[in-house]
Length: 261
Image (cartoon, rainbow, N blue to C red; front, side, top):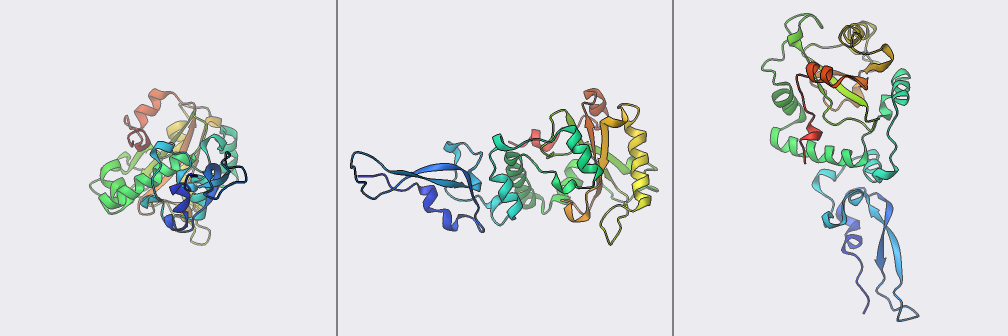
């Protein structure tokens, strides 16, 4: 009597919409009789993306709700073994920002999976990611700015990026949240020259005294790339900063990736 096919392989068809089958492989036994009855005839089938980077004893029977209906890009990333993912170096990070290709920043596959699980839970508990950001992370009772852009500290909050990209471990990824708008060009989705100048002046004033100019850089996501549209923000990356400085400027913040199981 030969083993039946793996229950994982038998559920592939309906487990996830737009299922992506990826490496690594799972060994599955055929249930037909081999020429030599003393020898099993295994064959390999690729794992569905939702099992990659998950310990075998934790494999779900079907695609989790938080991964159903996700786009092809996220399926490809989540379906990549962490061991095959190469984190970006500081020079690569600076280069991508300099040529405005921030769309090439991606999370480590297992971290993207956790991010998807986390945001799925947030939407169920808070109604939206924005509600969670405003009420729990920023704890702003009012979104109305006191003055012009960067005029008052109360209109600004610097926190860790809760789910940073796959970058060198020495890089600290911060997000600067603001109550005021920073204008984008409606045609390109990029910062206007005026808002670019305003952001750069703030970044230089805030970080230049603590780091060498080549050790910090900022960018603002294209409008199409933003995961949180309703609250204005931009990103700052620091290379190997003094931990005490980061602790002070973030008011002892702890990113959600360090809290979420």
